[in-house]
Length: 273
Ligand SMILES: CC(C)(COP(=O)(O)OP(=O)(O)OC[C@H]1O[C@@H](n2cnc3c(N)ncnc32)[C@H](O)[C@@H]1OP(=O)(O)O)[C@@H](O)C(=O)NCCC(=O)NCCS
View 1 (cartoon, rainbow, N blue to C red):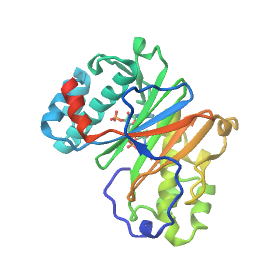
View 2 (spheres, helix red, strand yellow; view 1 turned 45 degrees about the vertical axis):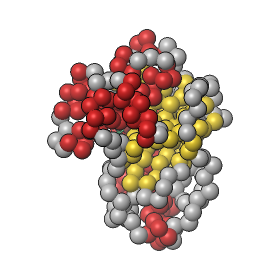
View 3 (tube, helix red, strand yellow; view 1 turned 45 degrees about the horizontal axis):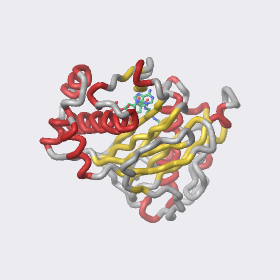
View 4 (tube, rainbow, N blue to C red; view 1 turned 90 degrees about the vertical axis):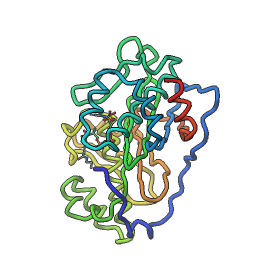
């Protein structure tokens, strides 16, 4: 569910106390065993750079790009995939064009064959021209960003997608908190689903996440394998008003570093291509 921000109730929601801040990446990029790096990047870039990033894509990725009906969607896919290749290439010290991906039966991409030697795991999400990339080693992870749309954040939609406990928690909140709570719930559920990589074969009503604004992101309950709750940790990611994002990572005790992909690096990535 991606879309344009239309939001009044969100504006009056309480400000959250995030412990994530976005910084420029260091020149010497290293990913420690206990680290998770999240990158944010704008996907609207100049045509010249789109063409250069296109050159980093494989034939099947280019064919996929061609299938987008609208030029804007096509270009954003090219930039998102080109930057994914560039970012992963930097960790692996490999030319982005050489990287190969494998896909799970539900479509989750991972590094293929020889490129998986360092157990680099990643996931990405994009909405309204902004992409988030999460990268770590040896742990599954999932990330989701959504544009806040007050017109979607109502009880009927909550009843359709959320668990009974989540709907009850949503209803119990004051009206001015419900929009943010809705998107907290949505992004946390989606991040968990994406970390598991099984798409919607994982029933949405079979697990509960926290959603109240101002409370920590968490997987609260699972109705199948109860060990799942202790297997995963969830985090909310600080973004400007109008977007909400969440990260689900296997295990605990990892440290989060958040980097913004500098605009000028679009040029650098394109020049590298
Ligand atoms: C891919 C999926 C998991 C998320 O889709 P989405 O939210 O529209 O898209 P996002 O931008 O967050 O993520 C897309 C990226 O996730 C990755 N991805 C694709 N399939 C995936 C899967 N099964 N698991 C994890 N990641 C996946 C890809 O890298 C994809 O980017 P790409 O298309 O550029 O290669 C989608 O198939 C899905 O099942 N969505 C569930 C929708 C829903 O009803 N959610 C309710 C939440 S309450």
